[in-house]
Amino acid sequence: MRFLQSLRASFSSSPSAGHSRDIYPVMVRCRRCEELLTIQINLSNDLSQDYERDLFFVRKLISGSGANRCFQQIEVQLTFDAQKRLLDRTISGGSFVDAA
Ligand SMILES: [Zn+2]
Figure 1 (cartoon, rainbow, N blue to C red):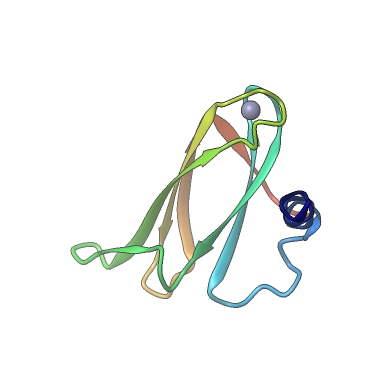
Figure 2: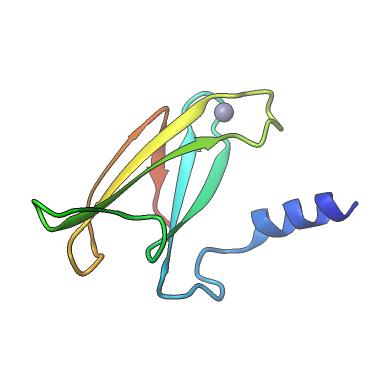
């Protein structure tokens, strides 16, 4: 039961609720089953630095919850500038969903 509750909580929480400056939420939609999935990039811990270009980048593989019996993996790659502002993003296996 505890597991179910925490699962539900993570689905209903909006990305803007109590988010810290270090957390960059990314919402994606699975290309196969259209499930919405949100991941949170920790700008302090998750980014790798590209010293040559003075950029930060992160690559994440996202798996569906399995609720739709879909196990498509979505690959997201984000590039940030030296001030950790988003410069570029690419995705395969799904599409980005921008919160209104
Ligand atoms: Zn899916």
